[in-house]
Length: 235
Picture 1: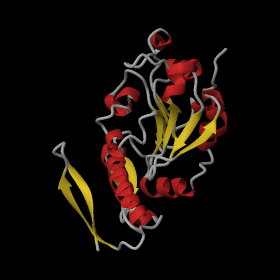
Picture 2: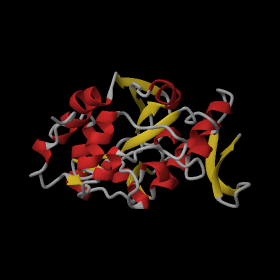
Picture 3: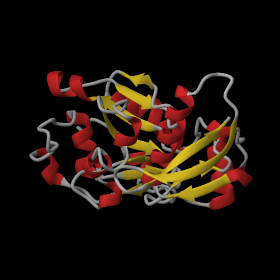
Picture 4: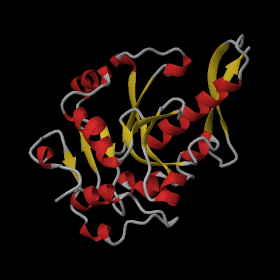
């Protein structure tokens, strides 16, 4: 008997199921030594990474292609560092097409072997609890998005752009944190790393600004990693 049911997904054209990875039952520890919950391992053993609703909701695989690998995604040097510690206590195992993260609380997972599932907001990384366990998350949060996504923009964007691939996330231009609006005409596609870093760079700068500050533009500068970083222009 399996712990989560994927039978309703196998015939859908808008679902991508990764190949089975039966070895995960014996080898599902992260490099840190933390092991995923058994129900999660069971899922990945049958579908090692998957996406639903044409890629708008995704669960990373384990020891798989870099763009869909859970450990690669959680490497601090990829994008987490940009949030300056805010995401360090979370293991992000899935994402929406906008960069909202499905995540475990890492200390709980390390200490107890299980964790509640949280949603980390793409624009703040604030953590909201979704479910007490992976099976509950699968049943009450993930599966409903197969046919009826909770985000009203998902259906609009799929109709306008088609599927969303593992090598991209969607964002808005102008950025929502800088006064942009949720309009399909404002959607742009960028690499996941760029979107996640950009959200952090804008959000953290905004949080530090006095309330009366006026933002008059955006530029870029090179950070200490030699990478371009967004800089708000204010007065």
